[in-house]
Structures are given as C-alpha cells and as structure tokens.
Length: 249
Image (cartoon, rainbow, N blue to C red; front, side, top):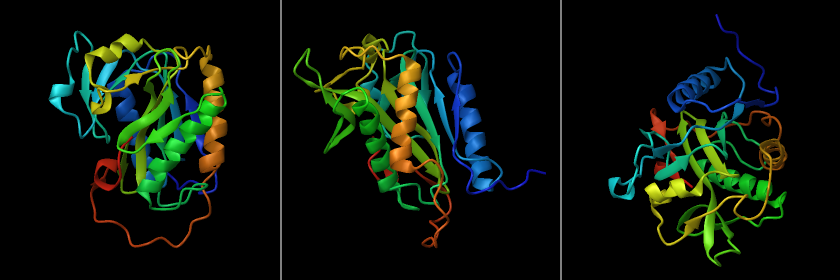
C-alpha cells in the first residue's frame, strides 16, 4: 500500500529527455495528479518537449484550426483554445496541491494561481533581458517584437484543476518552428503574432532556460509548499478549470 508523503518535502523537478509522446505524457501527468491528491506522491514540475502537434483546450473553436496538414491533433481538458507544441518549446507541466499556499499564491485561489504562472514566466524572461507582459483581454505572455514592431506572444498558459490539484501548465517558445503556428489561430487571436527567444535574437540553450524557470519558480511559488493553513470550505465535487473560474492564459 502506498504510504503518505511528507507535506514539507521540496517540490520535485523532472526533466524528460527527448521528445515525449503526448498521450503517454498526459496519462502519466493525470496519474501523478491523482497520487498527489491521494497524498502518496510529491508535487512535481515536469519539463518536457513534444513532437509537433496541436492541442485544443476547452474553449477551442473548430474554425480556428485553419490548416492542420499532417500535424496530429489532440483535444484536452485544459483551459484555453488552440496551441502548438513541438521541438524547441519548453513545456512545464505543473502538478501542485493548490489546497496549500505556495509562495505568494494563497491556498484555494485559482485566479491567483494563474496570475502566479504569468509572473513566473515574466520572471523567467527577465533573465534573458526580455520584458514579458500580460494584456487585458488577451491570453498568454506578450513581448514587443523589434523585427516587426508588433506585439507577439512568446508563452502560453493552459491548466486544469481537479479537486485542487493542478495539471497541464505553461509553454515557452525557446526556438520552435514558428511556421507551425500558421495552421491554427493561436488562442483565438489573429491580430497579433507569435515569437520565440530565438526570433528575438536570444540563443538560449534549453538547460539555461530550465535554470531560469527554476529560479523564477522559486521566487513566485517557493521551493516547497508553505505549512498547511485553515482552508475555506471545499468546492463542489467535480472538475474545476480556469475556463470556469479564471481566464486561462
């Protein structure tokens, strides 16, 4: 029988080698989230890259899948709309027990959790002297693209929360094939482009990006969950996603 784990153990970080099959990764992530909920596994940040694919969140419109070609398509339970995953994009799957506070993020507050993810990405980009910003009414993290003069999205957020345990997470464009975004309207936004660290002239190896993610996470979420506080009453049974409780970015 699985034994309960310590609630004060630092959050586990795992870096997956190579390109992770999406369906296998989803199954592993869901199993880990269930174990965290049961108290038999530690919280985890899982850093991965996927082969080229499109995913549709709970708010995705079929009309925003404009030219998929041969790229595989997966419909998921995360918040948000259409996005692309592929080599050169760092995905961090975030599996946390949100019944507990983490750094500046209070317990049982999905809006503040999403805001924490945004702040984490902005802290990470600052390591590379890039000013990431949020925009009211727009999803993702945005930067000014000096090559075009337009604002462009450099990172996406799409999460799901099930009985206060989060999964799915964030996607930061390091050096992906940006032409792949032509097959979709990313996050339903056609008026602005998509960019990456490489497109902004930043040649960042993935280990350097991972180090920046880890240091930024510590500043926002802390290295380990804070001591358990008296929580408010639990939500109704079932699933909660940011699409229900807060904008999914």
